[in-house]
Length: 512
Image 1 (cartoon, rainbow, N blue to C red):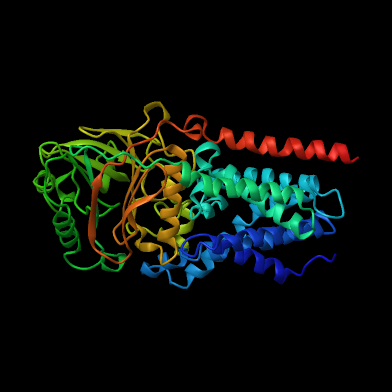
Image 2: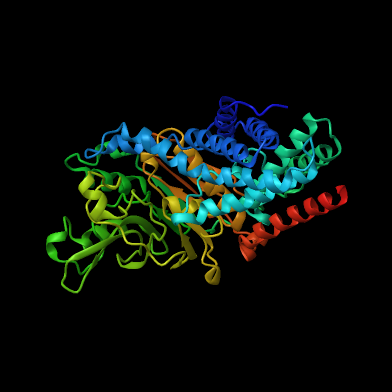
């Protein structure tokens, strides 16, 4: 068996990314990972295994992150063509993690002339470790963990409620290893994996009871999508037009309490009192009063805007990418500041060095955002505690809930207008995985789509497609009791990796 050429490995990596939204061709992902494992097993040396795994990762992340280029289309200070280099440059770095996984698999799992069960199990454990590492190193980049490809198969996606997404990714790699074993006519382990997967895929929908009807007085949630994109930010009257559209789409009070939610950063007026007067384009009390007029006495609104932070001299030192709670009397009920900021998006690392080189952050403005304290639950009268995760924060498995104050639901305002055609459905898919993991409903409100109401099983109850203005309103979906993953977080991923490794070690010793 010869080591496959680099072109074959690159092709496998590219095909492996087609299992993510919007295509969701998950069988191709399994087949591509099986081909990658074949390349690792066939490598004549550790260096060859590392090289083939890195090439696999470069192609995988280039295709999966192609939407990043679109963010550069809105920049005056940087050419749009730079976006293509950004996608490939990021992939060159992210490929280090599959490379580490391939090296571990070759060193620890390759013992026979043909792949065996131990090889597949070590591959799963190595992938869990390196995918988690990718999510935490250098502020982390957790976009598109492999386990997300199972969303079209609800019974398999529900495993995330027990083990989390990173462990589900590892089990997916084990399944790809089983596919490789089947190619080598080692049928017993692949048959067991196939039976277990089929039982989960068929059994969960059959056994999952339908949710009981909700009472008429159940609090309702209304998600607003104004459909105004980034290309209009510099237009005259942009702030007033967006504000007017948000108000018109927010509806009117009804017999049941309503929670009205607006997208990230769409409220372009400051709503907090106490700033120096020259910072205001509109009276903050009047802005809040206009929002409050839409609310009944038991309603509330969560709106995405900007907070300013001043130093002792009265100068603005930084800003907050924030969500404000607006109450029916026009008061602010609470504020959440985004904690997991996007480097080069919401702040420019090493600004004194990079700014003179002509680089800038992708979000417009010269004031960097400052990180908030982390997951927090904001008390909203009539709705209990609401967890906040702004945009990109929702992709970080195990980091979205204040575990000391478990919320009733999660609110994920986002601005996906930057993300082209592939970014918004991928972002939505990852929000659905957080709903499954935590057993909590999620509200997603975006300026241009895809906005959604997601139940605690990750199902889409209602959506607003990309490129359409509108609003969706439903009774607030019930939350589940804390899932196993909600109780123990990614410690479970470590346990799964350990349980995959132990049988592999036992198989090695038995075969000696």
